[in-house]
Length: 93
Image (cartoon, rainbow, N blue to C red; front, side, top):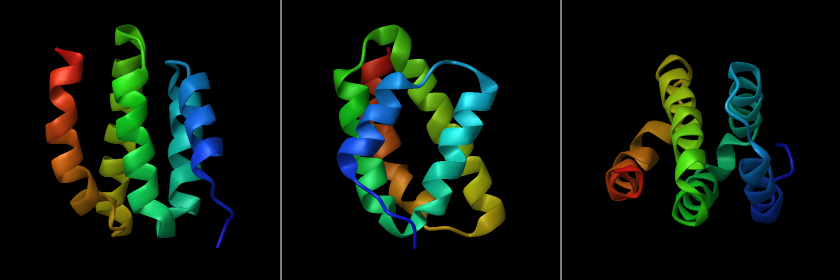
């Protein structure tokens, strides 16, 4: 199991740029720490609430990549993201 900390993940989210490579890289980082999926989803949602509007779309791209790849890998991310995505939609309108 890889080390995980909420503060480290939050920092990574705030530094995330809207490039395919960086989004894929952070998505892979999340999968390496999939045991902490509840914390990852919670920190992501808090980042959505704090981020500037233009940054929120990038965070959604990350969530999309994690969810999409979860379908292939059978991680628990899909169930965890379901309600969180619904709660976060108003932040990108």
